[in-house]
Image 1 (cartoon, one colour):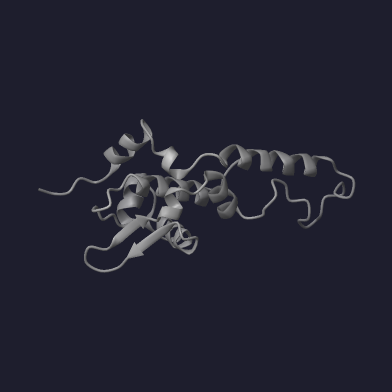
Image 2 (cartoon, rainbow, N blue to C red; image 1 turned 120 degrees about the horizontal axis):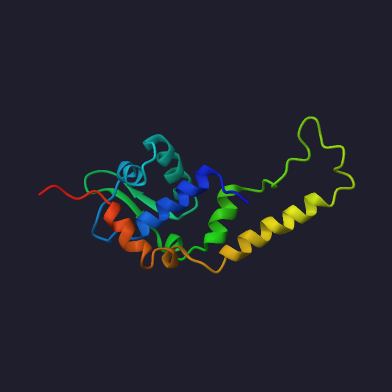
Length: 147
């Protein structure tokens, strides 16, 4: 199973926000720079995370991004499932459709493997992802304020 780049960026973004101090303000641009990804990609990711109630964005002076309580306690499995959507591992119905689809056992086996992948991530929360040594590394990637 391979996650899309979008889901990968979303998981890295919530991890970065999970180590942000409550009084600290971090922008989408800063998250993108710390993860070494284009701002436009990160902006789309942040918008989707906002719609899921995982990230809150505050506008104006002193604004920025914050991980919500829902985001902090979200299951990594739930996030991955939600961001990946209902896509199956194989595309049996594409044009032309696979001639084996009516009697294929592979499709079902791959669907079960995909669900097992998500189930393995279900017990893990975003807060647990940023425990040491990950959290301190994420903090070190953050831009330092100018003196």
